Image (tube, rainbow, N blue to C red; front, side, top):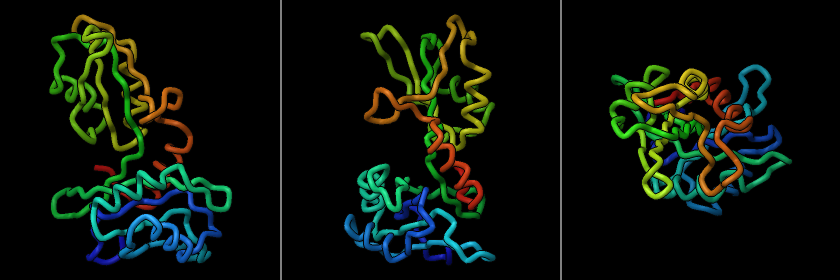
Length: 209
């Protein structure tokens, strides 16, 4: 983000933006949802063309959250569907960073009763830092123990899936796969669009937690 006045908690990251989209068009679009404080829409230093992403800052974190829910995967501009994600404040030492939830979310099934959140963090944390603590829950009337594991990049989630799927943890063989997207029973995380967004964020220094 440009300058020191940017507020990551109030900001959304907009990806998959067509080069023909203007800053004014983005402003008018997001203004329909909530009042806009500022927009950063970087251009290539040599070609002077927009780079396919933008940051839109609102006046509150609630407005940013609302915008991401309303506009993610729902608006097409010049035949491209916008990807709108909430950016969260994170810190590493004294340096402020912007964290992006790219969708690197794994679904772990058939977890032994002796395995707790701390153990899952230790096992899955070997492949990269987790965005949040593991979320353990049960299915099939409490018989089947499962968990969600969230990474900040697909590089880490892919490695964990490859190494841990069908492996014995305590006394049970766990199943590891990408979780279904919220509100969907057919679409899973880890698809091409999310991976493109992840790559785009890395190229433009949207740093993970």
